[in-house]
Image 1 (tube, rainbow, N blue to C red):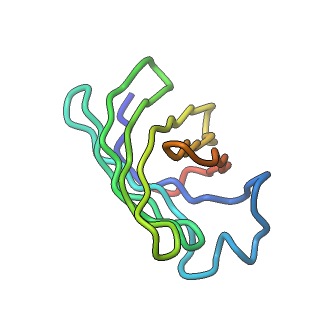
Image 2: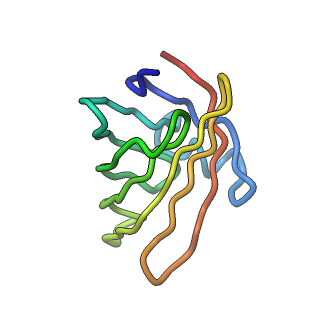
Length: 106
């Protein structure tokens, strides 16, 4: 299964719709090379780069670096795919963990 493409973030139990779409239509964009995954994300005031690996047929584990508002942030995360939907989780180092529900875009 190829993990290359864009996931549109459609909801979150942690944020309302106004926050999710504050700057752009929220997304997670991934590119696959072998078992390696790289990409970017932008949701609300959070954006950054992803560096990860495929951990199973429908799971990616990754580290991320980016910005949350004007503060630098980094941590670990995962993307778990279930058909045409996915659960995208960002766990900031020594900070909060946020979950986003995604729908396949391209």
